[in-house]
Length: 584
Image (cartoon, rainbow, N blue to C red; front, side, top):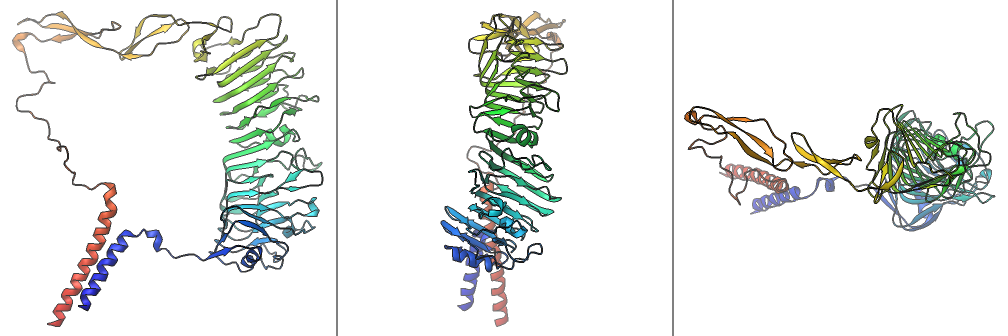
């Protein structure tokens, strides 16, 4: 009886093992639950490798209670406000969790510069708001909100870095600074901050920046330049080991938009304007995948606008692929030539853009030099007395196309006494119908003869065809929908007993004809190769409702559990037989 119970337990255990996911069998981690500032301080003092701290919703103030923690981070033992030196340490907030410190270091030494200092490997901070301690040495602000110093494999996810205010009312959150030479696999994801990320010290490993927002509006460092370093404190991400997967920088007119913003953009960055911007030299976009989101605001030339080192006086120039200008107005002044010059670029998108060139002394609102440009949403061009025309399409140095997306609404206003074309085609090798793609704008069509939108209804001519399909074309270059041929046989010559005949296929719609084929003489007929001989039958297929022998993917878990249970059952039977044999 006792042996039967043991076998029953083994069988039951087999079924349980088959049903339980593998991850539930893993060794548990030590979890520390924290609900007060004092408990957080104690956790910092007593941190160990592999711990998980779970902070309940609330406000936590570290004060100066952590300064005596022996952290041993890069040789510095004490003086850190929030040191994390254990490995594989995870700190996660439940609900709204804010961690601050009222401690003022009043010094610029290494430990006193930082709020959170990470010296351990594999540290994770998630779902937290961190507001750095005010440091009177930095006019009441925190220099570095988070620094990875000596450790690697840092993860910051869904973190908000709160701002501190300087004496002039400007704000900053403090930077994220990766000073470790080996960053391992460091990931900064879903972070909101009012400063920059520096990874220029990283020589190995990688730093992934994903869906990060840097608010540089009303920032302490907006427009700040040093006599030695120049504009060295800019929003963005520095470093050669950085992978960018979504970065948005919000800016206002206090920044030097060219020196601090556009000249330093990494590919894939989005710049969002929070107010109208005036620039003192041309905005030159040379990084692929950059977006300027105007949010309805304007970029115009400042009173002190002058030619930059590039030797041009356009307001904005794009010389990179995949650039998008959106919800933006560009206003040229007498100091500018073109409002927007796009040169040798693929995949440029203008979405809800207005180009005002009415005050310029030369040039055009838009010049497309050998680029592929798509207009989406609304597009408005305004020309003045000295404007050449609205848009110049120039393919002398490579193919140029202007594509009007479905639903695009284009308007053109000329303030000159003499009417000027909306589009001027300066095409060396490209046909107008190929350079201007999907040119319909409501009930209007762009006429390449005079560059104006005119009323137009397609007048399709006779059928055109090839081997596969047929269509009709309008003189404007538009084509009707293509359709496959509908063939019928036409007998050309009937076969006799001694003479072959012939027939051919003709499309009943467009008249396209295929080559004739021979009809064998009736006295020498053979079975056509596409007809079946008597006795031929198609292969049998499984009848409806029959089940395949092979189980579906969804059955695999059941079979696995059954297999494990059977294996344990078999083992139990072997034990039972041996038991009986030994008893004889």
